[in-house]
Image (cartoon, rainbow, N blue to C red; front, side, top):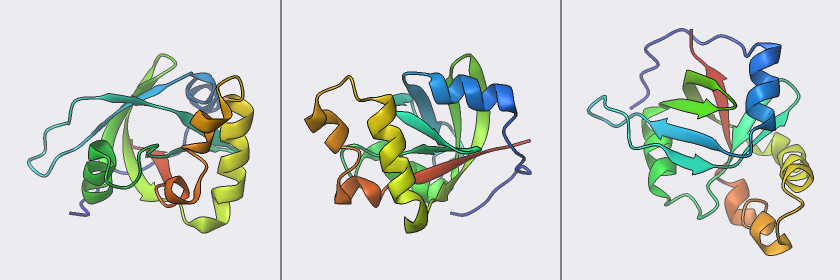
Length: 132
């Protein structure tokens, strides 16, 4: 179900700073019936002027399956709450996203950070694009 219903826009510098610095982001993907799924906390990283998330437990994670199907959701982090379009990031950005996760979450055990930087997690990389 690819039905972007609102125009996408760009993140403001303030939104990028606040969401990028947040420890966790809550994401509520939109279900097929149009309702939002219960928000789940996940890690988020900033690479340049973009925000990325990954499914630590792989592509079968419930939130990830719903987000990939609807391509829509709502996020909350760092005092920012916004509707987003969810896009597959593509492999070209994976090394930068890995580096961002390692830098931001380095205080956690390496095995935890590895769960979002291993080959399986890289396949789940999603870019969050703000909606107008």
